Length: 436
Image 1 (cartoon, rainbow, N blue to C red):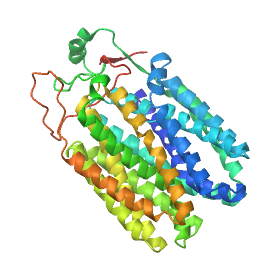
Image 2: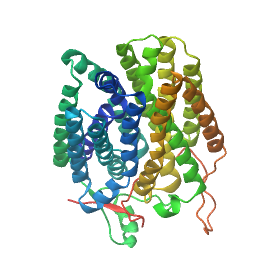
Image 3: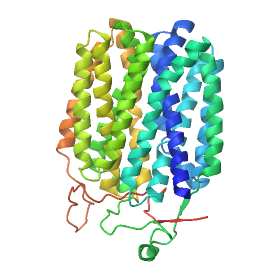
Image 4: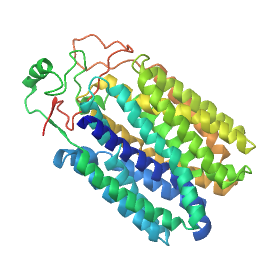
């Protein structure tokens, strides 16, 4: 097997694991923890918010560690930090300890995905990066399919949520070690005049550079109006997703369903998102990712309207399917759109900055918990998301491709073709080559 496929498998496994054990399944185990430890819904929501906050604030950390020690040791460090967070959760009796645990989980998540994975895939698969990134996000979302029912099964069979956290701690350590053994880095070439030589020699000697690809640096990209609009859309989508993951099971119970049905609905949401991300990655090679982003947010808007009107568990299940499809299409296409607009050179910095901006999503679970504590229902927050998503749809629909300030070139046309992506760990846009 070629090394690039081993790297793809290792990166995808890491993304699968961190997704399945943190954001998508934390709401399931929190339901049991809240009941046993007598925590409020606001406290539970805050623990979820800390997970998102630490994940967002540490979003530039992998770009730094990948410069210092490479992506393999970045993934290894992520596994160890994640294992420590899970171990603390397993022995926690107070909110303070659990808050520290979820904070470490967020940092571990960031070190393992998605920045290292996107970097590795974009450089090892330069000609098919959109499709492979789609498969990568599909693998990550697949963790959400198996995570909730696995947590439910462990807690149900053992009667202990602590055992669940202990098992996850061991698994995180194993995946970190496996990543260190399998992953191999691509390192930057020091001189920009090597670009032409790489193009002539081909991918065996390095990453070919598309002559039509925009040569943005990450600093130039993140101050454009287009980046801000895409980042706004990502913030709203991520806030909605984080909120749903934190309270969906509890809301289904309030509608008359069981915890098991709630876990099943969470899996359905993740499964739909998983399949959509895989399909969207291929579709993005033919349909412009901006169209997919807008379409995905429209589906999410309709889904929240349905959930706000739901009065029985089966309607919540319908929401899960529609919302999952919208989430998968919008989240994948937002990342591909960033790479399409700003090119491979700015990829790592742009994705990391966008991830950091989505830290605002931590307000979602806290707000939802406060609303539930004061009104006895999560329903009002659903209509808030209907309005926010409608705003994001309108602003993104009117967005045009960016043009570098002072450039004499014509603005890039928004075509469905092209868009090979790669990334660099700095902001100077150095091309990359393979290195033993």
